Amino acid sequence: MHDFYQHIYEQQLAVLEMPSNKKICGWATKILDVLFPERNSGEMKSVDDVKLAFEQFELELEQLLSKSKACGNCNHAQIAHQFFERIPALYELMCWDADALMDGDPAAQNKREVVRTYPGFFAICIFRMANELHRLGVPLIPRILTEHAHSKTGIDIHPGATIGHHLHIDHGTGLVIGETCTIGNYVKLYQGVTLGALSVDKVFSNVKRHPTIEDHVIIYSGATILGGETRIGHHSVIGGNVWLTSSVEPYTTVYHQATAKFIDSKPII
Ligand SMILES: CC(=O)OC[C@H](N)C(=O)O
Image (cartoon, rainbow, N blue to C red; front, side):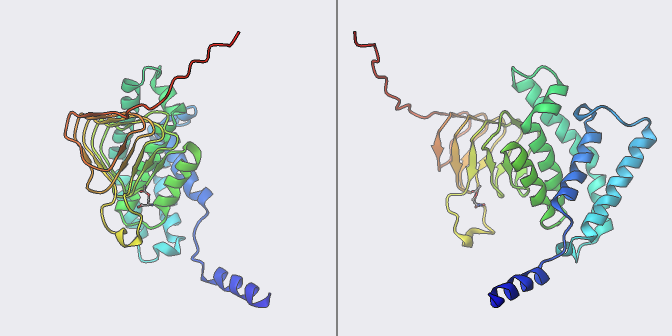
């Protein structure tokens, strides 16, 4: 047993120090609470309060980065500053995502409902922030953020994915968007959609493995679209449960041939 305890102890020594997931996700959630007061009830009493809050968030990001040994070679202050310079643009994208849900879901009554209750809205907001950190070269933290959203919503978006504006994710449970996926503007995705890789061999780590979805595409529930060379042309509609590993031209409708059998179940008298 001694060798086992020794091994576990050595693992502990080798572990890189990192702020807790709770701290990292708490930081992101606080930003969303200020950007979208509909999530709580507005707590800012003046413009200065808002300014102070963002200055505090920037400081907190700098601290999170400086306490992450995995980010040892990063310029913490510069990354934190660059991230917050991008916040107005990220906010605009998030607002457009909320608009896409409002405009695209007949069940959505108002923005408050979308912001406060839609899992798709929460997941895309967290993705927008994680993606920015990923672009700035921050290791691990982007993944911690999107996995937090995944655990809360069932929506799994890799922070490395490239996603345009007005993304509409309705319901969303079981949705998977892979790392090298490219999604255009005004795309609608439903629950259980997989935008995945055709092969999960490790040699494909740095290769585009996930599909490209062009503008104005709708992909209904349970559809699986695989492969880095697979391109769904703009304005196409991919029906529920479709399995696709090849490209489709713009304006194409693809649907799954139903194989359900109807059995006469009249009661026997
Ligand atoms: C979404 C997906 O294809 O996942 C499989 C694997 N994690 C990969 O990124 O290739």
